[in-house]
Every structure is written in structure tokens, then in C-alpha cells.
Amino acid sequence: MRIVIALLLVLCSLPAGAAEPVQPLLAELTSPSVPALPALEQVALVPRDELTDVEEPQQDVNELFTLEELKDKTDDAAELTLPDVELPQADIPLALNSKVEYFLTYFQTRGKQSFSRWLSRSSRYIPMMKEVLKHEGMPEDLVFVAMIESGFHMHARSVANAVGPWQFVSDTGRRYFLRIDQWIDERKDPLKATVAAAQYLKELYGMFNGDWYLAAAGYNAGENKILRAINMYNTSDFWELSRGSYLKRETKEYVPKLLAAAIIAKDPAHFGFSDVAYQPPVEFDTVKVPSRTDLELVAKLIGTTYESVKELNPALRHWCTPPNYPDYELKIPKGTKQQFEAAYSKIPEDQRFTEKVFYTRYHARKKDSLKMIALRYNTTPDVLAELNGLSGKSRIAGKTLVVPIRQTVDFSREGRSSVSTPQGGYAKYYTVKKGDTLVSLAKRFNVSSKLLSIWNNLKQRVALKPGRRIIIAKFIEKNGAMMPEAQKS
Image (cartoon, rainbow, N blue to C red; front, side):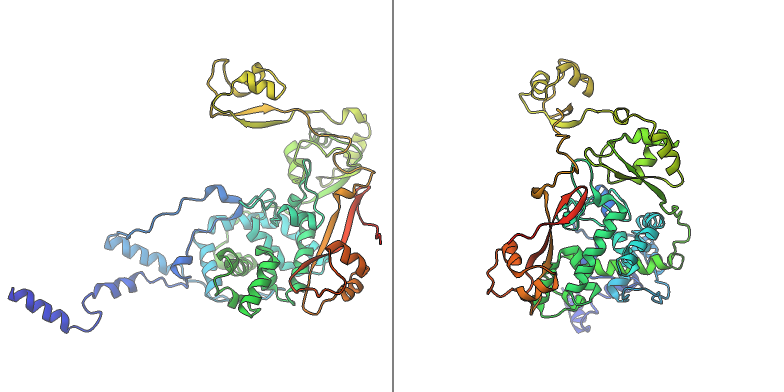
């Protein structure tokens, strides 16, 4: 008993913190030598084109390790020290802070394999994308938005159904005149999607008074979200906005991730990316195809593969050019244009295209039978059994079956035609700023104030609220081109 009391007296006499001398030592040993975000923000980041590989989050547990393992981890941390970083020349403002440094570290460690793939594909598309951005009067370094959005993967699709290298959702894609239907998804076209992205970013840049960080954040979260954040926190400084809780973590991390990607991509070897297998730049000739044509036929005529033609035309969703789309511009390998045109002209129109059956998937329910499903899809039980490797007596409840479907596409109406389709019109939007009036906007966009009122259900004398999106132009599709809608009073 006396021994216990003596120990208690000794412990009480120690200064605060001395009762646990091991903890500061462990903290010093495990302290990384590179900047890092708070623990809650150190999460596994997965590029959009690798969403299927996301692991389930682990529960928080006390980490167990031996002293040898602890030493190994300390040594590993020392090897992650960032090289001296001198910000490279760029036509968008670069910055270096703890958040940017976090992503510089991440891309060199856990994200290195993914970033290497991004770099490998970047050389295939960056030259073309930079030309488009330059033509649109935009900074060429905005190509790195596409890098962090998709890793330059043309078929990237996010959980929010954003698609293509610039990750447009369908509504935004159509707003900037990208065609999205059963036959074509131009969000996957590296040329057309870059034009649309340049126009969107130009609009965002003007909306946020020439601030590229806010423009990039708006590209990620939507302009209205950023406008509300600015009003909420009474600041237009992105770094200040990111301190608050209103913006999602994805948006807070978007700008530092963009800056880190740009810094590394401008000098990959300096950051340990010296063995990247860069792909050759995409090069192609463009030919006008007068009628619906199989890509297999195109490949045969120029001596290449179907896969090569398909890769050059990622916007095509099926095996052929779209119906009712006269003079569709098809991309073919560079140097094969004359060969194609000479050979194609000799093929009769009715031999350029072969009809194929469409299929879909059907999830069989408890009481379903092959006979019932066959009746529903206008086929036979034998066809279903052969397609799915089943016998007539196989139990199908709960299984997902491949089934042929009736041709539901009306080829006389599908695609572009010579008849205008007002119901398929498009609108261009503008976000109202402080001081805007119907009269000033009408003058700016060369449209009558009365028409602006009609398009937006406004009263002439009602003040416009900053942040509201209004229609400032309408277009319709006619003869394969977007034409301004007739202004009717």
C-alpha cells in the first residue's frame, strides 16, 4: 500500500505530459516531413475513369505496429520530401500552399500510377486541345482541367453521369450545342467537347470577374453554387471560400488538384515521372459521308481495323454513322482520305450499311419463364435460351438475361434532317450580375427586351436578381446546323 501511495506522489509531482513520455516520441517519429491536409481530408482519391476500383472505406481502428515497422514508415516518409518547387510559366495563375503541396505529394505516391496514365494519354490530346483553346481566346493551360476531370479518357463516365474528357452532364452539354442521342454522344468527341468546354469556361471567367480559381470551382460545382458561397461568406477569394463548410470537399480540392496537376505536367521528370510512355498525338483526316455507313466497311476500304476507326470517332455510339445525317464528318487515319473517297464512291448506297439487331438486358422476376419473356420481346424461347446459354428447364428467376428488342427507332425522324424541329431547340443562358437590366442585356445580346421577357416569363419593370440564369438566345437545328430561332413578337 505504501509503495502505491509513493508512486502516486511521484506521478503527481511530474509536470503535465511527463506521465506519458512515449507519446511525444512516437509523434516525432511518425511526423511526416511533407505538408499534409488535416486527417479528415486525407482520403483515397480516385480518377473518374477508375471509379469501379474504389475500395470500401475502413473503420477507424487503433493502428498496431512493431518498432521495426514504425522505423520503416518513418524512412518512407522521409523519402516523400518534395523537391524544390519553382512555379513554371503558365497562362493561368499558379500557387503553392499546403493544399497544393498535398496533391503534389499524392500524385507522386498513392496516385502515381494513375497520374502516369494521365500523362501517357495527355500527349495524344493536349496539342489538339490547346489549338482549340487558343482559337477560342482561352489560356492553353486549361487543358489540365480535362486532365483532372477524366485523365484524357474519352469514355470516362462519373457516378453523376458526366461523360467524356471534359465531363459534361447532358444538360450542360446540350446548352453548348453538343448532340446527345441514341446514335451520337458528342461529349466524347475531343474536338467538339473542347470547344464546348472553352465556351463554358469563358462564360464562367466573365461571370466571376476574371478569377480563374472561381471559374474552375464553378466548372466543378456549377456557377450558382459558387455565387451562393460568395454571397454567404461575403468574399470572392476561393481559398477563403474553401475554409467554410458550404462547398463540398470535392470542390474545395478541385483547384489545388488542378494546380498540382499543372505544375507536375509542365515538368514531369522533376517530380519523378521520367519513364512515362507517351502516346503519339492523335492525327486524322476528315471525310464527309453522304449516307449511313458501316465502320467495318470504312476500315476495309482504307486497310485498317474497325477498332482504329472507332477510336478516332468516340462520339459514335454504334457500329455505323447515324441515320438521316447527311454529310456526317467522319474521322479516318491521316493520309487515307483520297483512298477512301475513291473506293467509297464505287460502293452502291444500299451496300454501305447492314442492319443489325439491338439487344438489352432484362432482370428475370420470380414468376418469369423463357416463354413469357419471349412473348414480351417478340422473340422465341429457343432464341433466348441460345443467347444466354440456357436449357428449356433452366431456372431464370433473379438472372439477368440478354434479350433482342424490336427496332424502335424511326429512321425517318431520327438524327438530322432537312426539316426544322422547333421542339428540339436549344437555348443559351446568361447569369445576371449586379446592375443588369432587361434593356442593357437586350442591347448587349442584340435581342429585343420584349423577347427576353417572353423567353424568361419576366415583367418589363421587374428588377433582375443577381445570380439568376436567364435565356438570352434560342436556336433550332436546321439542315444539320444550329440556326437562331426566328424572333416573333
